[in-house]
Amino acid sequence: MAILLQREKVTAPELAEQFEVSRRTIQRDAETLCRAGIPICAAQGAGGGIFIMEGYRVDRTLLTTPEMQAILAGLRSLDSVSGTRRYAQLMEKLSAGASTLLPGTAHMLIDLSSWYKTSLPPKIECIREAIEGRRTLCFTYFSPRGESARRVEPYCLVFHWSSWYLWGWCQARKDFRLFKLGRMTCLTLGQPFEPRPAPLPELEAERIFPARYRVTVRFDPACRWRLVEEYGEDSFSVEPDGHLLFTRGFPDRDSVLSWVLTFGAGAELLEPQELRRELKALAENLAGRY
Image (cartoon, rainbow, N blue to C red):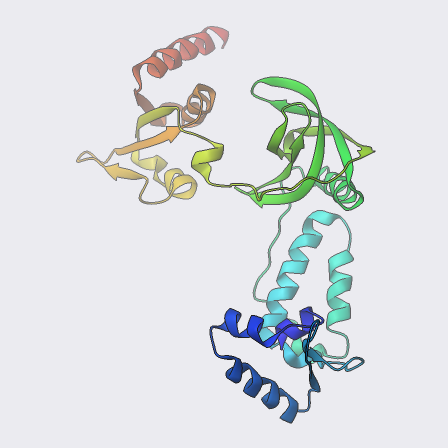
């Protein structure tokens, strides 16, 4: 029934293959829906298939209360970054006349906004407009390599690693790239572009952030809560004296040094030796400054 609601017409062989049953089973299912009062029709020959009679209105109670609650939670989460009530209004349309399906005590709340929530909604709206209008996006981008002007063909917004990204074709790099919204400024709409085949972004952390340094750090027991929060309870081992031994790959030196420094005297970088020497020099520089 859900498939027939989404598609105007579908053939019995297609349904049989999708549900891994025989065509006869699909025919029996269609007959069962007919006996339940839903006018299921079938047309033979080229262009034929199974479909719901035109003009028939399906009762939205086809969705169960947990399903409606899940939809509501998802739509509310999109409103948390859109800066509008667009998705809440959509939910009101879906639930019109069926208020009993939506009890007032929601058991799940998803907020996809971030620390820079005031600047995030305008960026998302601008990117959404560019994607729907097939127009390029021009912006200034800040990265560890420096500041650069980019012109990108946008394809989709991605929420991953607790942050928002734009997936698009970078005209300067001649390749698909992920751009972190928090590093983008001065967004403007550019010229229309002809869409190209766009693959889905590969979001494996090892591919986006390849490990260049294998790092070993010894932490005071008091740092345990941060390691559990940031990397999980299996990210370290406990030594006989209670200290925590942490080993993990990092993509670049700056991320290693800045992260270890946030622990102050609670962390000691053991390996690699080259970064240990750099951290020592950095600490001496800081001591001289303060």
